[in-house]
Length: 133
Image 1 (cartoon, helix red, strand yellow):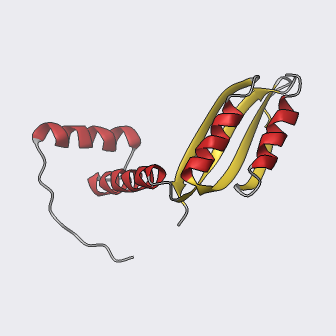
Image 2: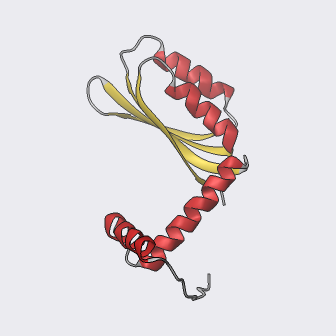
């Protein structure tokens, strides 16, 4: 994709905030940070407009919790059209990490993630969404 150059004028405190972001996120330059912020905003708009997005649901849970695996599988089957792949990793004797790759309308992905994260035995869960295209 061809890059177009343009000038940007910012108040000093906003420029300082941008430079802090560049430093903290280890961006190579201000342009990359601005690209990141624009793309982030576009993705968030797609979520709000319930457009098709892709992402991952990450769950950490106690695999000893009674019926957790069954309930999780039941929920996933109810949303089978959104799920692309599932990866299961054993973190230690008690804990597992599951990454569920998903694609679909933003609100349905949020609904799926919320149902899974709310299961008793889930220690931590998060939905990360990005553009599908």
